Picture 1 (cartoon, rainbow, N blue to C red):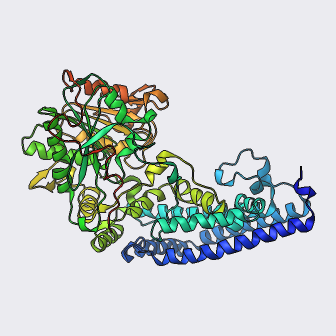
Picture 2: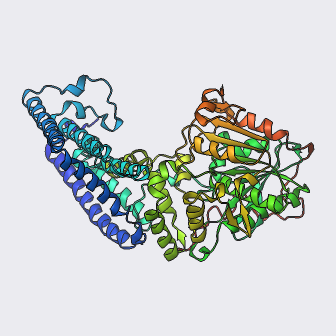
Length: 603
């Protein structure tokens, strides 16, 4: 057997030279593709270039005013900063000369997983880079913390944007100061860097010149084959939705059907990723006739579709069809995220119209009171909303990548920088992870609906204050009077549990149930009993402040699904013969998951 050591040195050199030549040829070809991809980019409206610069001007003015009134404090800060910088350099110099490990080498496990490579703690160069970055980050955060004369909103925004700068400038984000990427490049003779460039170009081409890091290996998944595989049929279709009726798995079903409205920011199959964690399958298995809406993905021609269209042509039409198919006078409805918010609006409208078609409602992570904008404060002020309004007026939709990018920047290290490092610097293929595959399969939002949602709900909070004008009625949260169950998630950074709870308290219903699941916006909802992973909290006293409610709540091991199903069962009537799609006057149009879930609009 011939090993590398047995190969003559000149042959090794020829092999390396050949590989270098091949890589250079690939780089030249990829460079041409890179230029072409960037040339095809349709950048967002210039009004979306960032926050109003007045924010930074006010912060800088306040900072310097304080420094001028107390120059000794500024001098002290500068001396401290430069003192730390000189100390770091001298320590690195000493370690370089003596070959000794730095102090970090005996500190145990690093607190920041970005610096987990041993070279950050043993190599003088990387140790100096790391310590200086930490010093710079501390200086920026201290400066921001000391700024006075800012409103609470401006302070939150300044904190957010300064932290974005700190995260962006982390040395692991740059090839020359990332030991993992440099080691991989040496090990692969540069192949990892070429493959990283290949990944970068492919992402740019896939997203029309926009840099959106691919989080999952899309080739590993196919809708209807290994994702969204629950058996069912599309039984109704209009220009905004397909209505899927799922095939029964029990001989008998509850008389009252369930109609589930997923959010239209992403696709419905988050609730049917795979058999083991499919909420859709689980509901059907408990003996319910389940209808699920699959929303359309709007294009520029849909610019005039608004919240009223989603209510009238989406929610109310789905309820009407489900009633006709099942022969029932009422349905039980479920709304997830923005669809939960809109289900509240629909219920308020139905009360005005004296329509009792919805017997009970379930809300998954649904906000109705937007008085606390939480982590979205940086994006929900006039400068950003004005920019979004200009963008959608020009394009006709809020393009999906803008929403995806916004969500990602709430967790930039996990959803932007770390995936970019692995893909572009390390040359790794993204993992075959179904949840991340779904996360990347987002949709556009119609122009009018986007502006109405952001202005009327997120900014002006009309639904819980003055009332929101919709379809000729003034809708208020107190009009939501059907029995309902609200499920929220403990670590949800999109729809914070405390904010969802505040809306629940203000609803007019006298029959309210509130459940707090462990985990976040997705994992807390997609939490099958078989996993026995996340527990949940219950407390019947909804008069308490959220903190007091949680402190006095009962904790239960395991998923909330069985508890909710027990609640739903009491409102679902007697058992009847199972219904099959197509047996009730509505012909089968197409098998689940339908065609709208894969349709690509023109923008």
